[in-house]
Length: 134
Image (cartoon, rainbow, N blue to C red; front, side, top):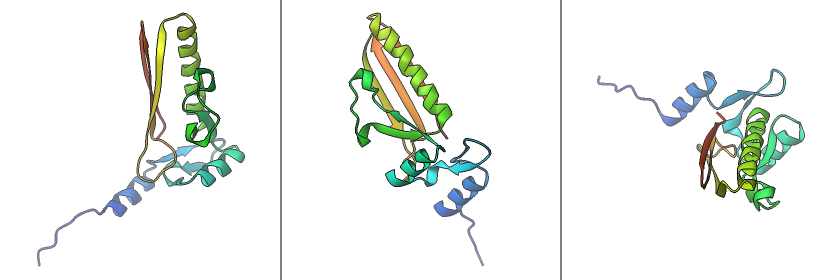
């Protein structure tokens, strides 16, 4: 009998979950499987519990709007990193060195939490940073 060994997508996801891919330790010792957060309601609930943080994809200071389409729910460490990067870009913009800003999240599967965010600001200077989330 000729049996081919293969991994299905669900088996790969199960293996990655076992080794911690898609999971991140947050506030205290608890671990949240960020890849399993697949709705706004789940993300908001975790935010309200203080287990993840909320940031604006396009900062309000840069003309972003207070709307769900402009909100990302990510771990606090990465949220702090995004705020720091946005502040650095703001200071460069005030100095006239930056004119354009874009932030592009990358998602995996149905997860509502991005795996990474690429931030790019251009003008007289170019500023590119990638925030890896999981």
